[in-house]
Image (tube, rainbow, N blue to C red):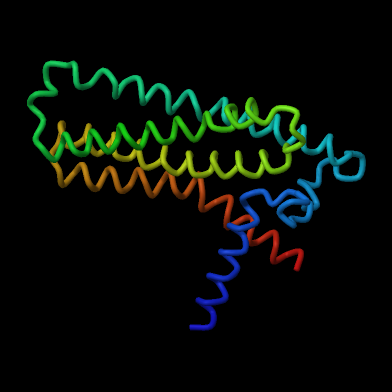
Length: 193
């Protein structure tokens, strides 16, 4: 039991550090050592600017995927076959639509935050908050993609197959988008500690 509790504690600490605890005098956070690539030669403002650019570049990859799924889902109710969906299929469609809407909103939130707080000296907090938005948005996108797979597979092969394929899709996305980076982060932290 102690091993399980210790593992949960390491996982919780890794997840907590995963959400970019950058320094901010208003929140009592201390600047982390950085990513190790340019720590010695990079001033804190340069690091913040680089990290913000990296975040925005990553969002440029994730946002189009959410937007394409969202655009597709917008057209579905207007197709002839939509009327043939069962009540549960319509509910699944709507849940997928809402999840994709939330993911899209979360991916676009850093832009709105930056525009509203532009030149207010809030870049560190903005980066931390925007990073959290991106992580939660990726979670909603994984869920929405999986639900879209379930809905499509249900129409093609039936509910039992759809649930298996949807679950496999969600496990796969959770593994490559979350489990791999978090477990490597835990290993790296244990190696340093």
